[in-house]
Amino acid sequence: GPGEGALDLLAPPDASTSADALDETVPHVAFWPFSFNRSRAVYDSAPGDVRPHPAVARIIVAEDGATAFGSGTLIGVRDNHGLVVTNWHVVRDNAGGAITVEFPGGFKSPAQVVKLDQDWDLAALSISRPPVSPLPITAVIPQPGESLTIAGYGSGSYRAASGTLGSYVSPSPDLPAE
View 1 (tube, rainbow, N blue to C red):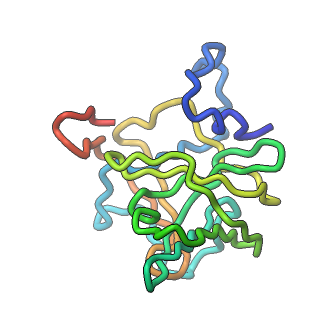
View 2 (view 1 turned 120 degrees about the vertical axis):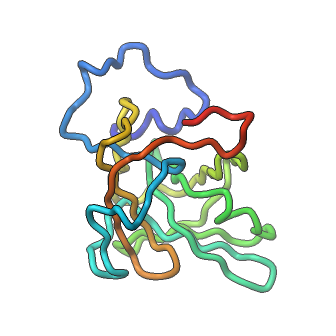
C-alpha cells in the first residue's frame, strides 16, 4: 500500500524505481533541511486560514512539568502501525512521559520514538494506524528553483507556506548539504 516502504527506515532504495517510472502527479515533498525565506514565499497562509492536510498531525509531548507541541507527517503505514516523521527538537525533552499524535480528523494515538537523528533534527515515531493515507514522498530529489510547501502547526494553528527551494544546507561542516 501507499507509504509502506517508508517503514523500512534503513532499507536501501528499491533499484526498480526510476525517475521514468514515477507518477508525475505526486507532488515533491521535502522535509527540513532546505533554505526557505518567508519574505520570498509564493503562498503563506495566516494561521488557521487553510484546511489541514489529513496526514499532517500535531505532536503533543509530555516534558518535565510542561507540554511541548510540534508537527509531524504520516509517511508510511503497515498492518496496524503508522510511521510519523517529526523533528528531533520536538521530542528531545520528553521525560519518558506520553507522546501523542493527533490528526486533524480527530484520530489520536500514543507514539513510540523508533529513531532519532539529532544532527538532521529528525525523529521517527511509531503510532497506531490512522484512518488517513500517508503523504506520498517522491523518489526524485527536489531541485533548486522548484516550488515546495511546508505545513504544520508551529506555535498553534495549522499553517502552510510555499516558496522556491533556494539550496540545500548542512547542519555542520562535516555533514553533506542534503
